[in-house]
Structures are given as structure tokens and as C-alpha cells.
Length: 251
Image: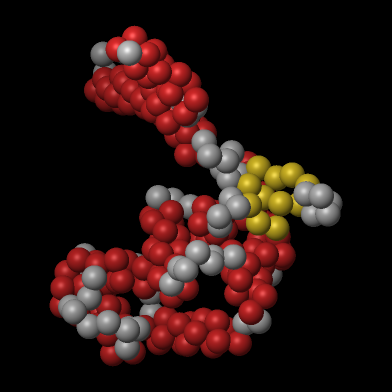
């Protein structure tokens, strides 16, 4: 399997494959590349409907140039350390960003959230985000406002009175709960349509099925999220305390 960056010719093949309606996996097979490479390439360069080989190639060259000339202080905004491979971390950051975009997050919001996820401190300032992502303060501000509105991050001032943005340990729980509530709203709205369109009509029957399905999914997600959260957030001290009694009893 060839390594290294995609060539301009490979990008042209990707564009042709997209135009022919090929799946990412099929394009990857033809180029002998990982599917994740093709997915990431397309998603960070306009998506399947707006991808252009020439623009994607120039954008990649610009990113490489920026990385080469970015001051060390800005490159270290995430303070990776721990003996990590910087290139591997960058690749993982792009892969995670692509995944979040596929889940529906706009590109800049996905980039900011990924930065917060992979920062050991779980928090960054606006200037650190601007330096690492090489974007404008306005872009970061807009992304932060969106993520905060979605309950995915929170903000507070540090000892230097700077605003820091955090992802809490239970951010995925909060996001899941919000998603479940959204599905419950779908159920409620669909059920309202039953009375509007008339019980017993084909459209009402369809909406009733949507409502029942959504109710079941929402309740299942809420129940599972609470159960998993209880398991994951059980304090180690409590666990060790429960296991200590049988041990002393055996003695």
C-alpha cells in the first residue's frame, strides 16, 4: 500500500470517481489507498459534491507551507509531548475532524471540538485555537458559540482572566441526552400530525409509526446513557470499598 501524500493525479482520479458516483471504498481500492484517506481528503476539500482536484491539491500545498513556517510556539498549542509522533497526531486530528463532519458538525466546529478532545488539559484559549488551526479569531468565536449552544463545551476564566474553553468528561453523555430529546420531539410532532391529517388515513398511519419508532429509540437511548454513565462515573474509592468487605470476610 503506497504511503505519503496524495498526488495531483490521484486527486484527479478521486474527482472522476466522485463524478461517477463511486463509493469512497471503491475509489480507495482503485488507488490502493486506505478508505479513510479518501474520506478525509474529500471531506476537508468541499465534500463529495464540491470536490475539485486542482483546488484540493493547492489547498494541501498551502497547509504544508503553513505548517513549515508556523512558529514553534503556535505548533505546540496542544502541548502534545509524552513522546508522541507529531505527524501521527496530526493525521489522527484530521481523521477525528472528518468523522465529526460526517456526523453533521460544520467543518470549523468539528476542528475546534477535535482540538479540545485531544488536548491533554481538555481546555484551550481562543488564541491557542487560532494559532493551532491557523484561522481568524472570528471563525473560532463563531465555532465556540455554536458548540456552547449545543452543550458540547463550556467556558470559564482562568487565573489570568483569559477565557478558556473546556470539554467535560461527560460531554458525550450530554450530547447523547440532547440527541435523545431531539428524537422525542420528532415523535411528539409526528403524533400531532395524526389528528391534523385524520386518524385512519394513510398519512396519519405513517406518522403514527414514525412517532412510535421515535419514542422507542428516544427512551432506549436515555435509559442506556444513564446506565453507562453510572458505570463509567463510579468512583474507584467506592468500588474498592465494596470489594474490601468480602476480602476481610475471607480472612
